[in-house]
Image (cartoon, rainbow, N blue to C red; front, side):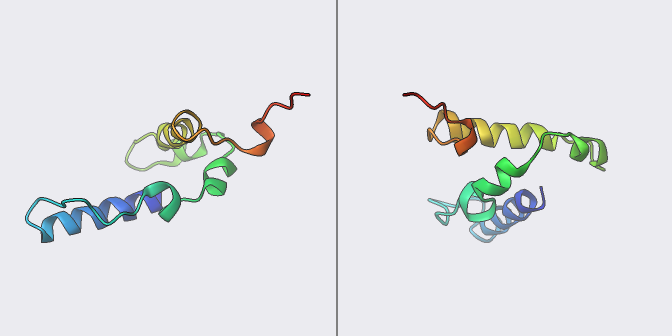
Length: 86
């Protein structure tokens, strides 16, 4: 979640500096440049982050959305999730 916050702050600062428009951005992505696929799949979905969140957001929703994007948009899943077909 801290990586997500850092990226949002970075984008916001760049937009403020550019007068509200950021054009084509900087080419960086949250997933890949800030959060690795290994980090994303390391989450055990225990929801401790949801219980501990001091501002009452749902970090689990963000994690699941990023995982869903990897699988549905990029056809990427961890090796353990691949089905072995012979």
